[in-house]
Length: 324
Figure 1 (cartoon, helix red, strand yellow):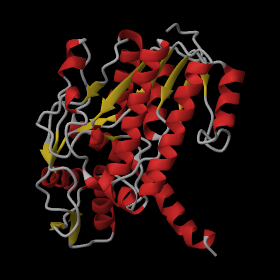
Figure 2 (tube, helix red, strand yellow):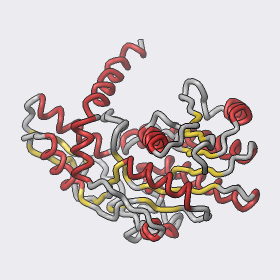
Figure 3 (cartoon, one colour):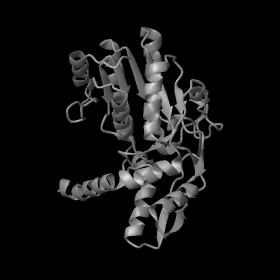
């Protein structure tokens, strides 16, 4: 991939897509083709194919997706399955049809079986049942991954897949009903601090174990693989470090300066009991993450949280008006 190559980042306004754009631009890749979801609905096959026919991107980062936490997945399973299947099918098929040189598909660590051996190796995919709270999303992501391998085998397409762990960073979603655990906790502790609340309620038991990676590290890994990896097997991408949700809550409590007590609600779902990726294959190629968890969360809270939190509040206030 040359600096002058024409690159399409699908989903460039999302947390992952925007991080990929930042990383590409920092390395001098400025021939980027970007479209918002209002300008190009990737669920529409004709619109997607017309875009590829007109623009003819040489390289594609497929980061466009409907994403969300346990609550969003549990209450809108049809949306997560339908939208993600359409986006992936249309972009991957168009990439083949219009001669894209290489495509990188963003998978997700949540597609591995609920009770996978730990750390989770790439070959554990489809060796057991999914985690029920995100099964529709996981099914869609497996379909995208399998499309990449199928088009590679049938047509010789250089389509690869990266499987990131739980992410956080600039551009995150702070809506309590659709966000993931780390941004949800940042919001809860921030609000408890400014409202002088005496407790913060955290979903689940607090005992499940998770791995978190800054989205800028993921973007760096995506560029690394686009430049250095051309194999069929998908690639895990994580930090190799895990902690309990209780420990995460305590770190965020410290960073936000919140004095409220932490209270867990075991009636709410925990999700997978443990989810730690084995990223040794990626490390073996010479890549490794650079941003520590405390450093990364502190940077997010100090530099990007307030703007994105206020945007979430504005969206929430607009919802009742939109429904009238």
